[in-house]
Image 1: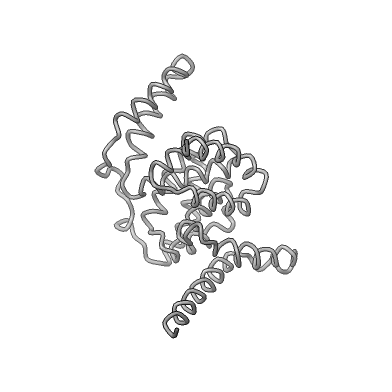
Image 2: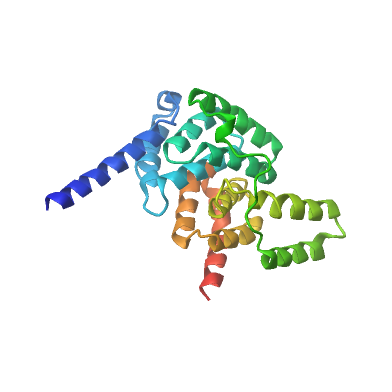
Length: 253
């Protein structure tokens, strides 16, 4: 009985700590201007959502960072960089997420995110040696899957823009997606989060399937949608729900 109580106590302490850490990202001005919003944030976002069982705190921190970067919400981004680092995301993974999402959210969002992260990295004495190399040894390419993707894109869009077709192949799927400092599952996770936060559900089918092929579970995907409702807004998540539902149902067949 004592060991059970001890385990339960430790779990409760970890849950409370997680809520407190995430709550630290809420600006003090919220309580002075919108006390009702502060209450929702403390009780429902930090108290409940951040402690949901479907997605780890580390993944929630990474997803939140990706969503805020996508939405160019740089005012509070540094606190979420700190939260991600405290939650187990490595400096290399943050760096690689910024690089990756430059291609999915735009260069301006990526450079702004780098500017927000830089003071946090400096304060924590994170140096260039802690970050991914510009030209690392790449992960192996799934030639069959890439050939199918390339044939589909080339067949549909070669007569529209060969530049897009070629750059998508050479820069994204034969380079960026194979960089080793962000696991394929996490690379897919931040990509799907960015698409939802940007309100681009039409791009989700391919990337959610890829995420699940890379190890993301249906439970985790569902928890990510619930989490992002707070950071991207309910309308964007409801636009993504039919796509997720179709992917889940097709994969279950």
